[in-house]
Amino acid sequence: MELRLTYQEISEMIEKRAGRALPIIYGGPHTVRISYDVNVLFKTASVGLDLTVERINGSDIFLSYDGGASIDFMVRQAISMAKNRPGGDMIEPLDGNRILLSLGKTQQAGSLLDHITLKDIRFDEHYAIVEFTPKGV
Image 1 (cartoon, rainbow, N blue to C red):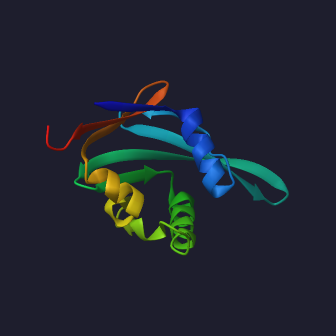
Image 2 (image 1 turned 60 degrees about the vertical axis):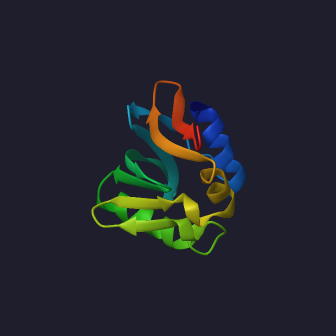
């Protein structure tokens, strides 16, 4: 089974939760490009980040990102700030520009994962596609 979300829907969900929209565009079968506007010396600059789904292991999603040393610093700062927010304990930085999302650490996702098995997360020109199978089928 598949769940398809448009990039606009995902961006709106992020904006609702974080208060800031993050434009998302297709970057490859398992990669999306996320841009983020930052203010630098009285100018606004757009910073791009390629986020790739490496693999899924149970309720854990292993991601990698690419964007250079300054992006690595910003990602680690963002993860550090997220640790103090609800759900922040599910995000863990790993070595080599990688991130672990432990969905089982949140009550909502954990409840969902009691009933489904994640198979894949992939992307096309318009959608993020979450592939899963119901448990017990």
